Every structure is written in C-alpha cells, then in structure tokens.
Length: 347
Image 1: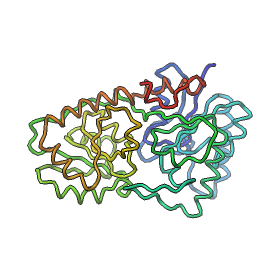
Image 2: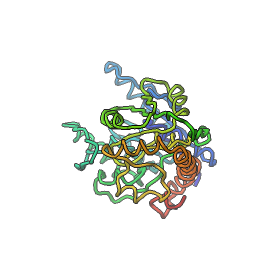
Image 3: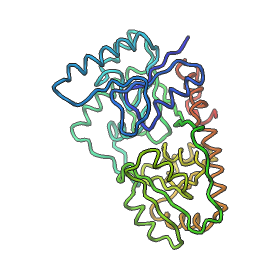
Image 4: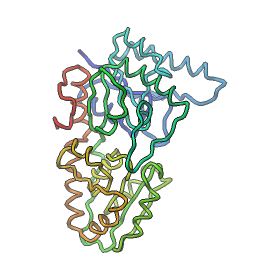
C-alpha cells in the first residue's frame, strides 16, 4: 500500500509539520493542512485561511468542503490533530469511511481533558467548559468512533478517554532534532541563568514558581520569556544554564524536549505514576512547588551536574523524539503492522 498522508486541520506545537517532515524523510508522501495559521508561525502546505467573519461563513464552508473532497481523492490516511477532521464538527467522518480513508486521531491535551471524565490533578485545575462540554463530547465521539486508532504522547491523557474499542498508541512527541545545536552549561558559571517561558501562566504554574524561586539562597539570574518571537526566545534559551518548564499536569511537553535538545537541564513536574511509563533514562528533574527551591539551589551550585544532565538530555531527545525515528513507527501504525502500543518501548 502506498501511503498518502494528510495531517490537519489544526497545528499544535509543531506536531503536524514535524510529523509531515519526518514522514517525507522516510520517503512517504505527506502534507500539512490547517484551517488557519496560528500565532507561532508553524509552516503548512495548505492554509485555507478560514476567518471568523460570520457573514461569509457559507463561503468558508464551501472552501472547506471543496478541500475535503479533493483530499479524499488525493490521500488515503488522515492524521487528525487536536480533535479536528477535515470538516467542522467532524461531519466528514462517515464520508471518509465510505471512501476507505484511514483515520488516526492524535490528542494533545486541552481538547480532551475534562471532556468525558472528571480527573483531579495535584498541581493543575481543568477548566470548566460548561455547556460547551456536551458539544465537545459529540464532536470527539464522532471522531473516535470513526477512527482506526487513537494516538497519545504518553499516559497522562489515558484517564480522559471515553471507553473505546480502537487501539491506543503511545507515540512520542517529535521535533526536528537537527535544528537544535546543543549549548551546554558552563560549569564555572558563578551566576547561572534560569529561564522560564510561560505560554500561558495559569497552565504552567508560573505565579507559584516565581514565588518559590524567591526562596532560593544561591545567586542566579532569572529570565522570564514572554511576548517574544520564536527566534528571539530561542536566542535566550541558548544562554540558559537551567530551564524550568512547568509544574502542572505531571508530564513533559514540546518545550521541555526543545530545551533538552539544546543540552539544557530541565525542571518539570513528572508524577510518579506517569514517570514509570517513560524510559528509565529520562533526565528531566522532577520538582513540585514545595521542593523547587531546593532543587534549583542544588543545580545552581553544581556546574558539573548541570552539564552532565544537559548531555544526557540531548541523548534522550536524539533517541526518543527525533521526528524521523518516530515517524518510522507511525508508518507501521498507519499500515496496521505495529503490534506494540507503546512506541517508547521500541526505540
């Protein structure tokens, strides 16, 4: 079977375009389509430029319908991101099934948390969706019931899935590792630079993190990265000696992976139950609010430890999060040949 993959219709932290580029590197035809580009400027092959002007909604729908019909002729696999298929409200799912287009639904986080099941986190509160919860349930049920498999990044989202009879695959997040040149911490740095980059303060526990950092006894320089372009932000990340990502849902995301690819020691809360599902060599330093000051103090005062963790971090990303390696396994999933559900175990 010659695979022809369409990823869409929303981009989340580059996972769509990284998937496409990894597949292409493996000789597979793949494209990325979005209804509209996001503020982070990730590339796409097709941008339908669907706006929010209610007066021209019929025109928007015709554009989406035309693209959907063409996509169903051109591709035989839809890799859905963030709970969206090709048409709004996942209306195209039945049509896709009739045309024998395989569908794999990859969920990324906030589109699934709290939709079907209530789940309490230790350091994170799921937003109440109110009446929108039932609309979201209907939309996602349509996608899940019509898909050939569900893709998650790790075990964190498992409690949020409804009962399903489809295979669930744990597929590592992916980045273009070659874009990141490691810059390891200077062991002799007397005033290490700590970087924290909250895309959304409430989601990363930023206010409490800043409060706890005031308890650190050692000297350090703190840089809070907000309202920067990607290029400006990465120039700051390169200078960092320590990067604090988040204390929230108990797992790690794309920013932590990018920081590790740069050779930085990363502090992020990893819950004990989820940590057991990751490879044993995961180098992320887990901290909770009450332990953050102590963890930071130790890293600030131990330059050799910072450097060694940075080196291990780079190795970890190269092994588990390289888009080319990960998409080799995605190919097997699309073809129905993958018998291992946790891809971390194969890498």
